[in-house]
Length: 97
Image (cartoon, rainbow, N blue to C red; front, side, top):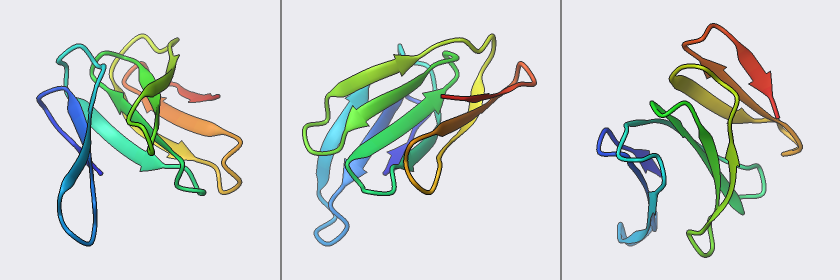
């Protein structure tokens, strides 16, 4: 997956190079981080709008919005078991979801 300053993240077929889904949801603000869950079924994005969002890899549909940071989210990561998500923000906090 790729994250972009145009406010989208994109999922690609790694073998063919074809675009699978465009993930819109950060209100046109830059997407700074994209991360896949360990099982590959969910992708998380985070960006300049101060939200983290979860998406179904299969459908490209948004499944959750994580709010609570007061500034840009620079990074999002899944735990190795996929049960927790960590986000790091310009508000100088790390949140576990």
